[in-house]
Amino acid sequence: MTTEKTAPASESILVVGGGISGLTTALEAAEVGYDVFVVEKNPYLGGRVAQLNQYFPKLCPPTCGLEINFRRIKDNPRIHVLTMAEVEKIDGGPGDYDATVKISPRFVNENCTCCGACEDACKMEVSNDFNLGMDNTRAAYLPFAMAFPARYVISPQVIGTEDADRIKKACRYDAVELDMAERTVNLKVGAVVWATGWEPYDANRIDNLGFGSYPNIITNMMLERMAAPNGPTRGIIRRPSDSQAPESIAFVQCAGSRDENHLPYCSYICCMASLKHATYIRSRYPEAKIYIFYIDLRAPGYRYERFYDTIKADENVFFIKGKVAEVTENADTHQLTVTAENAVTGEKVHQTVDMVVLATGMQPTAVNHPLPADLTFNENGFVINDLKGGGMLATGCANKPADVVSSNQNATGMALKAIQTLTGK
Image (cartoon, rainbow, N blue to C red):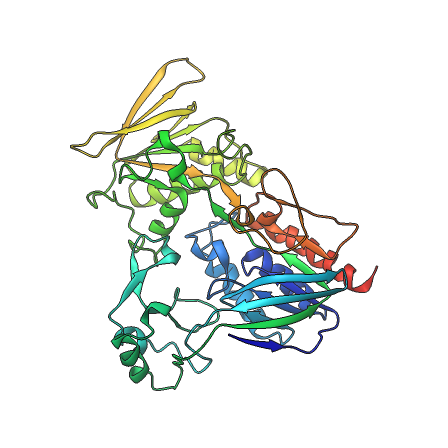
């Protein structure tokens, strides 16, 4: 492992995380004249938004916003992007931080043209993390079609194998560097913005809902990837057990959320995500029956309320107010029965469906991957900002559950607070 020292960067900001909040923070600060270092652990920028099929409020594909942001980043020399990188340590105080950043080898350099020759030459397959492990990808791969940086990645599992030699020989641009090693970079910055985002709550921990035991139970993010044209099923939503078109689907809201045994808080986005998912199913299967089991439906804001009204008017969408007690499977047909008590009528409901989608909540990434800094967290793992003290701040879902629009608004504010740390105003 090698260590590099950079020259002290006066009036610079470190943004940890390259999702939508991190990108917004970086762009807002850089476009008013400040140097920004963006550190992202994945080999690409875009975070969770890049994995979506569509996002609110206009049901746009991720290319709508990300493509513009990627172009702005590419054209702005004040933004310095470090992918496959993680902050190991931060010392110092507001206006004077020393950050140690570890960068893992990509094994592909800037000469890469994304021609795909390395992928064609590679025979080994690895789990596709971008598709949540629902399929495999070649071990020499482009994470997704519009990935930024637009550069291939070679899995470390290839190193030392025959595939490594094939990949090296296939590249006509001298872009493959199989001897790349892990390295560290030391950055001198005046402020740090943590935009470390969120991860889906582990549905395996919710014993009564059957995830992991029954193949036709999936999570909301899995459905998001299924519906995406670049997802594991190329946008076709099918029952995992037999690849048949589902005639009925149940959504279980608050799967692990608002539950003292799991996530005690509301994750803000889950209701609207399931309503959005209903449009995915409806567009492909107009006659499918959709059952939404909920505790309370939350549509924050006028536009979301109107969207809810549109879904509610669909005669094939049925809303059942009641917390789901369990989900069981018919072993012969792989159909699922959702059991809940209707909170309005008091009747016990047993609804049989072809698929179940669990609306799992969002958990701050910092819960399972502690941040190497002196930060204050609430009882649920979200960072509590010291807005008066400044210096180190959190934005987006590192700070609270939020949708894309709210994350962008919050990130703009945190860019300003970071700049105030540098200027002392």
